[in-house]
Length: 188
Image (cartoon, rainbow, N blue to C red; front, top):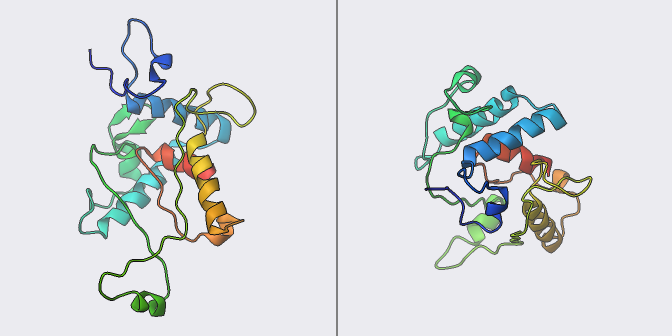
């Protein structure tokens, strides 16, 4: 029987000896429900993320989806895994992103030949032990944080000399397989 992401380290811990493992939408629906409870977030908060992301995609010629949507469309979209609707869930595709922010003068100084832009900081962190989501107030899974993302961000901030990311960073590219993922990453 196909069990989705069962090959990921530690995922079997969530599993049942007979029943298949939950799908990714089901897992993130649990996270959304918990965040609604803990932080007071709503389905409309998820819809605003979907609208923003579709709006951003509408300006990029190579975006997977280039159609703007409204809050009403996001709120009334077919349900995938309550509370996640169609526009809260990503399509199955691969991709990558890069963002370079600089002054025009500095950009021109690098615009020749095979010169490359220097990245000031980069970090990666993995966590293969369970739980994937760790509450800030003690042990156990509460589905409201991504510890690996927090660790990677701390490493990158330290490497770049950033002490207050909310004041020193103007733009960020976050993984958004589900709208709730973006909100959790922002919260972290």
